[in-house]
Amino acid sequence: MRDRVSTLRAATLSKLAFANQLREAAGRPDITVIRLRNRLDRAERPYQQITGYTARYTEVRLDARQQGAVAELLYQRRIDLDWRKDHDYHLDTAMWRHSPEPHEDGYIPETDHQFGGTAPVFLPAAAPAARSPERAA
View 1 (cartoon, rainbow, N blue to C red):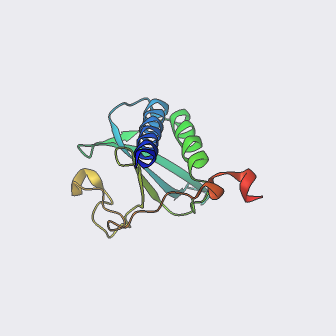
View 2: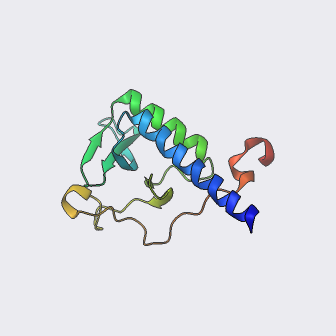
View 3: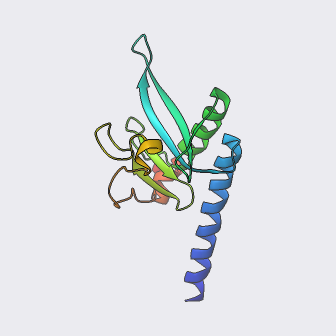
């Protein structure tokens, strides 16, 4: 039992540390959700837009440097996710979800006053082998 408590405590500290790293990379300590959206520019070239949100559903725009730093942290943490899909990462709960579609509640959190996305079925944590390129090889 003691080993299980220690393991859970270490996992919680790891999630908190990761959330703090993301907040530091974004330059905003008040961010609670990070949303990655795949977009097309005017020339129809794909790019990813990363936006932060506060607990009050206020959008926090990140500059290119901040987006790059946040993206690098997220990609390193979850190399197993399909990054062609839009994702939300909830920093306080360390949960990943697919972002809502334009017709779903939460697509525009500022007006919907919710984040929406996949129902309470969250994306599971990566298996250690999936997270570690050395083990996958």
